[in-house]
Length: 380
Length: 120
Image 1 (cartoon, each protein chain N blue to C red):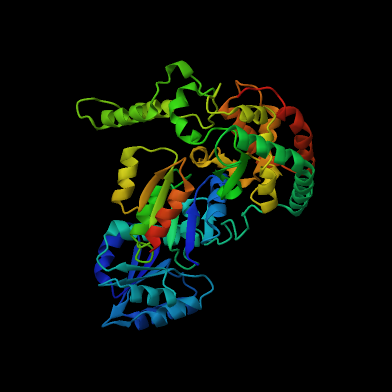
Image 2: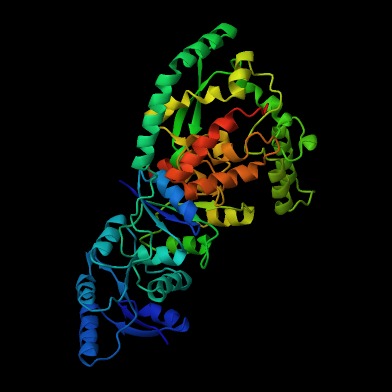
């Protein structure tokens, strides 16, 4: 059906609008328009689908009464206010008085058409959005109680062991006992993550040099030493005029060279002797019990990731992991750890799976399987 | 608190963004351009929008053009998120007045800082 548009003080726009297929009625000012609408209403004639009105004459609004009258109708008729100069003050006034939009009088027919379509085609259904539902991940009470009880008793129980390890670390190499790293946990919250130091100091800087040894990399033999150089040359190719490289092939090349998300190294020379022992039985992870007490993470959950790994997972497919709890041990550790051919893909999938299905019984199962997984000789 | 509107057809991404930004902003999330265009009429004008380029129905670019041609909404800074990063799309969005065009996966901290800057 042809849409009806009521123009008030905007006669010169009538031609353009009728060419766009609207049926147009013209009125001089808001009083004339109200009069006509009253008449239509009492005669039970159809109402227009939209009102366009010339808004401010000598700075005073000239549409308030018409908009007020429209508000009184049972079905809302949207209205757009036009002005020769758009100012913020008038925009606010127009909105306060109930206008649905505020546009320049000389706006192109094409832009106007967009707004008309927006205001008249879309059904006035308000219940569509995800209403103020709280998506903020909060640890369920049972989980928090479980965490504090277990972490608290474990810390008390293991205190002698902690002291022994602390002494061993101090004696073997220079540096602090506890190694702290920023990690991304639940809800992408960044916190300081505690571990017993198992490497020599300044180990983090060695990561890049070792990249080609990455045991997770799908194609280790083809990985050249430096990925940064490759990226730079890629960019040159894209810019170079004489070379025809489609963006798609560029993107594929780039993504295949992108570092795999989970870094693990075989025979890592950065690790100390004490480090090797405590890593093999995962004792180096135990200081995270203090993170649990602090509320940074849970005992069971998705592993908190270093910042550079986390930022590679914020896409449609993998962001889900951040919506669940973060933890010391998790589904991935008890399912896949120890297999040195574990793929980054399957790990990410397990993280998402845990987020979807975590509950008390699943947590308990994971927890009971953890000691076995922890002592697995893996040399990773 | 400033009002932030997120439009993404992926539910996980909506929850993720809401979860990440709900400490600093009032976050409303919508699934489609059509939905946000309707709902926006009944609420206060948002201070900023984060829009997924690939939406079902009208895409992010159509939404951008509609908002930019409106007197009420043209000043809203719009950040695009996209799973693909084809330069013609990116350039078209920036030309049409988008604040930024960010490719997924992205660093949420980076987006957060850019948003803070755009709001000041």
